Image (cartoon, rainbow, N blue to C red; front, side, top):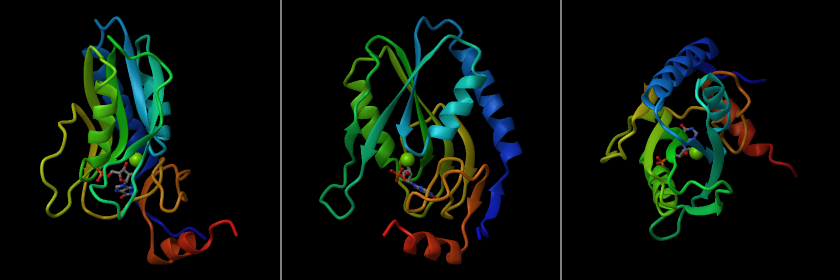
Length: 184
Ligand code: IMP
Ligand code: MG
């Protein structure tokens, strides 16, 4: 049984996504070519909801990144390349959560190498942690949260909990169960 504690409800997310989409629709009204690029896999719920609230013609694509914990440098590598052409486009990178900014920096590097006309960031969550250091500047942020580990609305622990409709703090029992129930 899932005992997660709701931090941000589905209703609150819906309202904030609408507000972000309204702002984005205004900011990009004159753009000839807006492309949303979601960072796999955590951004899928946010990307799907956000793009349906944006009142402009747009394209979307996804980029996959994988971090190899324990290796030197720890820079994530691109595992899924963009299919759509983003050269000359106004690209809005859509990310689930920014913690140290490592993932975002790798995504920014990969996309900017493709020559977009502009490149901005839209992150659902920005997490405050001790010793965080400077983060890539995000033009759009959904919610600022504390250092707790969160799941739901695309965010996972061991690939679990992504389908929760809210952002939640999992209980230690839930984390233990999710860690112990990988496919045998
Ligand atoms: P960063 O690279 O340190 O900014 O961390 C961002 C990435 O770590 C996100 O794309 C998530 O995949 C993951 N992450 C960070 N914090 C959380 C969390 O609280 N829950 C789930 N995933 C997280
Ligand atoms: Mg992610």
